[in-house]
Every structure is written in structure tokens, then in C-alpha cells.
Image 1 (spheres, each protein chain N blue to C red):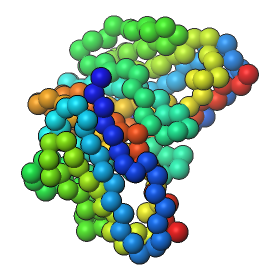
Image 2 (tube, one colour; image 1 turned 90 degrees about the horizontal axis):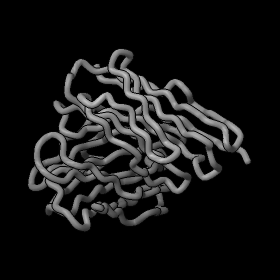
Image 3 (cartoon, each protein chain N blue to C red; image 1 turned 180 degrees about the vertical axis):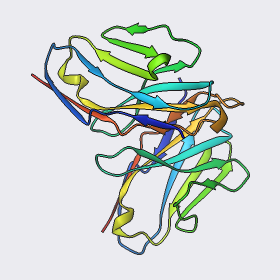
Image 4 (tube, chains in turn yellow, green; image 1 turned 90 degrees about the vertical axis):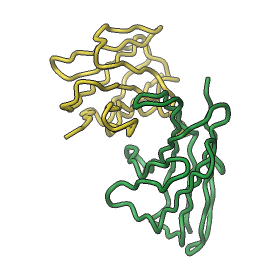
Length: 115
Length: 117
């Protein structure tokens, strides 16, 4: 069965702290994509990253970084020096090659950054 | 980058009426579009896959007669909530896929918030 688990329902940190959002996925497919999306209060989904199953290199984009570990089926997301504008719900998602873009979303993590 | 637009962005209707939501790919052709539903503080749940020129494929538990999907052109898919009731109030999001094959680029619309009174 395919599944994405985001165990952290809500996280609250003070501005400038680093925060890591966990994502664990389950699939028997060997070809797949993993995503992170941000959903601010306005509701639209903001694409953050897509990583394919054959590329385990970690990625850094400004204050954002992602750690993909196939051995533990995890794709964690770290925000360094968090800012109030980072407050949002963050979704991890899985797209299987075999399912033709029927993305499976995790339950989301609500991140609150306090000034 | 590619843009997917939904209209209306929010709608309020009376119970028993039908509501149509449009999803348009503005600068690319989308052979496949997807419709998601999101209840407050919950995740996105796939409702159906919409293929241009053919019938939509609905996920288990989604009533096809309740949620009518039409993908009449390569740039437009519509979701009609028929005889809407308060429990249909939700945030509906579409996505559209570019290119062919299983891994085309996927873009999401900005969502449509439906409130049924």
C-alpha cells in the first residue's frame, strides 16, 4: 500500500529557530517522486520541491533544505532561521510512476512561527 | 511557469442548488486533470481523474452522480456539485498535468472554496 505519514500535526517555534518537518513514505514501487508543498492561509498550494527516487542527493535552496534517505523511506524538510512568513501548512506527497500522477498527500504539518 | 486557474475562487450557494467550478490550464494543454477535496484542517483527498474526451475515473467512495466532471477540451475541466448540501462545503483544488507519460509536470490551481447554506 502507498502511504505518506507526517507524524507532526502542529509545530510552533520562535522566529529564527531552525525547524525540521518529518515525512515518511511507504511504497513498493522503485520509481516515484516525492514532493513538498506549502499551503498558506489563502489556500493555494505552493510547490517547493520534487525529488525522484533515483536521486538521493540532499538539496538546499536558500533557507530550505531537504534530506532524502531511501534506507529509512524519509524525506525530511528543514527550514533554517525560520521567519513568520514561513507559517503555513506543509504537505509531503508521493507520486508513483505506476499511478500516473495520482499524488498521495500526507496529512500535513501546521507550522507556526512566533515573532 | 505553467499556470492553472480555477473559477470561482469562492462561492456560496443555497442547499439544493448546483455549482460549477472551472479549472483551466492557461498556457499548456492538459490531457489529464485531477480534482481534490480538502476539508478544514485536513489533507487533500483525490476525488477523480479527468481525461480529455473520456469519462472521469472516480476514486472509491466518491459519488459520480453527485460530482459531475467534464473535460471537454485540453484546457478546461469542470466539476459540478449537483444538489449541493452543507456537507459538500469544502475547498476544491484541481491540478493539471503537462506532457505525456506517467511523470509530466503537475500544476495546481488556486482552489475554490464552496460554502453551502
